[in-house]
Image (tube, rainbow, N blue to C red):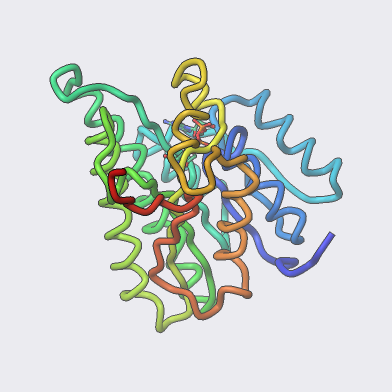
Length: 249
Ligand SMILES: NC(=O)c1ccc[n+]([C@@H]2O[C@H](COP(=O)([O-])OP(=O)(O)OC[C@H]3O[C@@H](n4cnc5c(N)ncnc54)[C@H](O)[C@@H]3O)[C@@H](O)[C@H]2O)c1
């Protein structure tokens, strides 16, 4: 175990599955105490156990990120944190006329408002200590339109702009804000894309394959660590590369 993050506490939202689970394990392996957030107590306990079995420290806090009051309670229960990973997100795929106000609100509330509320609650402590790092999860769909993902892309494009705004607002006081923009990644969430869905999307990348969650998590862990001390306001594409436009033969 490396101890580059020992003495630090990290809150990872949506940490019981997918990319968030991989980040939680990596941050703990670097020595951080991890506050594992999720909704399901059983999955939370399993994630904490997996971290402890690997020699790390963790505790679980449940909260529904679609409810701003519950997000505030999550922040209170997390206590002082040095690293905030706004990972949890929802990405239903539907054409515009098949979506409702409720679908719109759900994506904005979970993907955009919850990170905002957590920053409001947790960054003042980081500023008081003169040090902190926040990493937000974006998506390639925030910068390039994707079929059925307009609301999702808009929610994450909003988060990208907040990331850059906060980087500017708080950087000189020691708190860095960055985002990671993953390409197609094999998680429970993308398993819904149907047989071969995520692998087919992966084949459209320059690397020609979908990512494993650990490959996204390592970029997030890097941005949260002192090794990234001069990186602030970056939206880092971790997307396997977008292929070049080639002449039609
Ligand atoms: N997987 C991909 O291909 C991909 C690509 C680009 C961006 N992303 C982004 O990466 C992040 C993680 O994605 P993933 O694929 O690992 O997701 P996932 O669906 O596998 O896991 C997301 C986690 O967030 C939690 N969550 C969702 N809504 C919640 C709510 N209301 N309250 C509390 N928790 C809630 C889920 O329970 C789950 O644990 C998301 O922000 C997503 O938008 C993923």
